[in-house]
Structure formats: structure tokens, C-alpha cells
Image: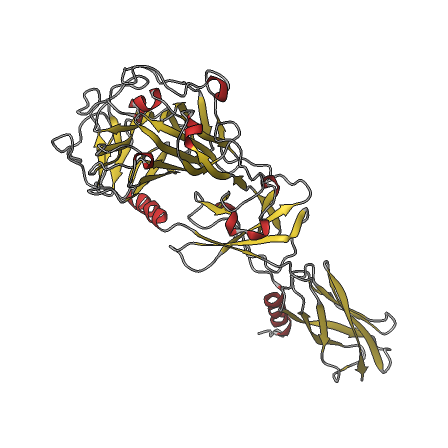
Amino acid sequence: MSSRNPAPALAALILSLAVAAPAQAGLGVPGRDADPIVLTGADVPKLAGADPGSIVAFSWDGDWIQVPVQVDERAVVDYGVVRQIGNGFDNEAYTDPGTFAGSDPDPALDGGDEIAFMAKDAGAGASDRRSPGGVVAATRTEVAISNPLAPGAERFVYLFRTDSGLDPAAGRSYVDYDFSLDSGDYKTTYDFNGVPGVEDDAPPANPEDSTVTTPAYTQHLLSRWITDRMTLSTGTSTSPDILDGDKAQVGRGCGRSELTFSRGGGGFIANISGPVRAIRSQIGANSGTYTQRDDIYYERRQDTFTYLRVHAGIGQVSQFRDFAPAASGMTYRSSAYPTGVTIDGMPDAGIPVPAGSSTLQPQADWEQVTGQAGTLNTVTRVETDVPGFTPGSFYRDEGGSPSFGQCGGYADYSSFGTSGSEFVSSGANTDPTLGPAYSLTAARTTFFDAPDQGAADAARRSEEVDEPLEAVAAGAAEPGGPVLELAVRGGKRRVRAGGSIRIPFSLHNTGGSTATGVEVCARVPKRVGRAGRCKGGGELAPGRRLKGRLRIDAKRKAGRRIRVTYRANAENAGRDRVEKAIRVR
């Protein structure tokens, strides 16, 4: 049985443990890649006053990687001017030089502006890394991102101001929003008053051919309030158009619906298309003069915020997606009915339809429509102080004979998997221009997910909406450079002529940033001996030590002493050098 000296293997293990950089986990927050991170200018004082187009983002994944970031400016806007009706009221909103909201009066980054990037682009911590090239190091801002559903490891994105013209998009675009008004230029051709006969079963005013396109979905926007087509592409192929309309009704009927909203007066606050997200902010829903809807589109997620501002008497409102016959075969389920039913235009015994026009189905924490082409996981939350507010859900699958009003004008009159949220209330006033007002804001979050998902997937999305990612921004100092300090032991040891010895060393990084390409070598005069291979080749973080042994061979005629020079080198640090003699016996 042969035996081996374990010392070399042990030394190699010690060396690898000491020098190896932490393994990179890749970019992203596990399980939360659809989620955005949105900060305000007030969160990032080191960037205050910067040109919004000069703010860039980087992540660390073994090296600096530039990632897309988007600044959307906000200001106090007169909604009367936005709607072109004279007196209105002031409210903070997105600004857009292409609408009557206009540009932000403060063109620099201010406290109300928003900075958006994606959680999927977050990387490892880089507090010990010098800033990347092309940025102003003094503006360095570290954003620490944590997942309350999986406490523990943080992920990071670093914001800077560029002084070299870096593109904030980093050469990428996650979403494309093409606002295309049939009549031409928005400011000069849009009809802010709408058309006569808003209740007529006729097409909307101000028709559009606008589109939103991402790798996960497409949507077609026909007018304010009207989305009339949707395809999914999270599976192996793109689905047909599965949407008849994204609809809204007051009192379950066509007297007031998304169609009448679009035919009545109103306008756009902002239309924004950036590398991270697109924003479509619109206002005006018949007598809800200042009722507002903001749709914010991300690569795999859509956030829809509806701000109800309407006179007293509006006590029942529903918001639902009415699917097209092409959605037949997909499955609908919700937290109230988790088993699910097949969308086929036939009433489903598994989801009973209550009698009466004002009786609600049970409130749903989440809803899901899923099939081979992809999944819509939808979560709706309402914040309100309106008295008597009672939330519920809405589901009908009744084909060509719906039991509720189905409005035409642009859509069919059928019901396929018609599903969403509904509420009843006292109908108190929510319009601040009409005196004391309550408030109601509905937030609908839609995830465009992988095909054929189940109830557990939708429940997880619901939890994620209720437990959003937490982001903390803080100004970060530029770390100092690495400093190498080399120590060599074994000065009293002797080597036999013609033999070898292993001399222990310790290399300490006493600087403020990681040393890269670290290497420790020995040099021996050729006439008396030779040195073995250098050790290292990796990184050495601040405060860490690299320990190992260097082999020295003595020639048979080495004499009484061998003078050895030990050198520590790094790609980004100065050398350290130690000279010692080894006695020969």
C-alpha cells in the first residue's frame, strides 16, 4: 500500500480558501425577476440636480455590467390644462412635453422624479470595488435590494452620473410603446371634448393604432381606456389574440363603460416609452372628469392604477378582462375558486352566478388565466376610505348569451372567461373639485408568466404584491485602492544541498478595495537553486489574507546560504517585496 504526503494537497486547499473570490450568483433576485425597483429623486441625494439622461446603473457579477435604468420626471400638473377645459385642480403626475402636462419645470433630477430599473439586473455587493469607467465616482449610490419573502442575502445595483455620455439604456430595451394617434399630432388634432352621443354603440373617439410590445406579450390600444388585443409569448410560441377587451362598467351595463369613457371628453397626461418601462397616463371618464388611469408596462408585468374621482352616486364599479373565443381551452381559477374551470363560452357550475345585478361573487386575492401559450396572474388591491365599501370578484363564461350588458362599438357581444374585480359602496363623492371628497385607488398587477401554471403560482404572485421588494439607497464612498503586505516565515529553517523546502507566506490586503490578479512568487539565483511555481492568480478582498507555501530547491553546490527574493504582485496594486536567506546544510 503506497502512502502520500498530504502537505501539498492541504496547502493547496488553504490557498484556494484564502484567495478565491466569492462565487458570483449571476444577476437577479431569485423568483422576483418580473419586479421593478422604483426610487424617487429624494432617495438619492448624491444624484440630485443631475441631468436625468446622465444617470446610469451598474451591477457587479465578477465585473461591472451596465444595466438599463430610466428616469421619469414628475411635477405638479394642472389637470384642467391637461384636459383643455380651463379650471381644474393641481396634482402630482408624470410630465411629457408631447402632452399639455408639459415638461417638468425643473429639468434636473428632483425629489419627485422616479428612477426605475429591474430586480433581474441586481448583482452582488461591490463596496470594495473601484467604480467603473465613464462615471463620476463621487455620485456613487448603492441600492441594496432584499426580498421579505426570502430574508437573508441582499442584491445590489449601483447608480452613478456619467461624465462620458454612457447610454442609460445600456444598449437594451425591455418594452416598446408606440403611441400612434390616427388623427396625427396629439396637441393639434386630439378631440378633448369627445363625440356626441357617448352612449351610442359606436367606435371610440380619437382612435389609435398604439401598441405595447415586450418579449412576453403584446397589446393593442384602440383609444383611451380601450385595450382590444393581447397575445402571449412566454411559451414556445406566440398565442393568437386572446382578448376581446379590457373593460370597465358602472352598475353592470353599457350606460357607463370603457366605451363611453373613450367616446367622452378627456386626454392624456403622459405617454412615455423607455428602456425599462412604458407609461400611459390618461384622464377623463364621462362625469368622472378627473378620473385617471395609469398603465405602467414592464417586460413581464403590468401595473394598472385607477384613481376614481367622480361625483356622488357611483356605487358599483367593475373592472374585468373579457377574453376572445381564441382563449377557449384555457383555465380560469381564483383564490375563491382555486380548482378552476375551462374557458369555453359555456356557464360553469363550479363558479355559480348569483342572482341580482348588485350581488357580488366572493372577493379574490388573485386570479389566473393559463394555457399552453402562457399565463396571466392578476392581483387587485384597493385602497379607499369610501363608506360602505365591499369588494368582490366577477366571472362569467356565457358565450353569445351573456347575463350582463356587453357593449359593442369595438368588441363582440359574447362572454368568454370574463373575469376581474367588482365593488359596491355608498357611492360617496371622490372628486376633490366638488367639495369634501373621499379617495379610492385600485391597483391591478398582472404578471405574464410561463404556460400551464397552477393555483400555487398565482398565490405566490399575490404574496409578492403584498410583500414588495425592499430597496434602500445610500451614498457610497469610493473605496481606496488595494495595499499588499507580504510576510514570509521559516527564517530559521535549513535546506539540504540538493534538496527542497517549502517556505510559508502570508499576504494581507490592508487597502480599501479588492486586489485582482494576485500572485506571490519567489526568485532564486540560478547558480544556487531555483524557485517553484508562483501562487495565487485570483482576487484578494480588503482585510483578507492569502496563505500558502513556496517551494525552493537547492543545488548540490549551493554554498552555505541561498538568498531568496519574495514578491507579491497584483494587477491593480503596488508590489511588496521581502528578501530572506535560507541556510544550506
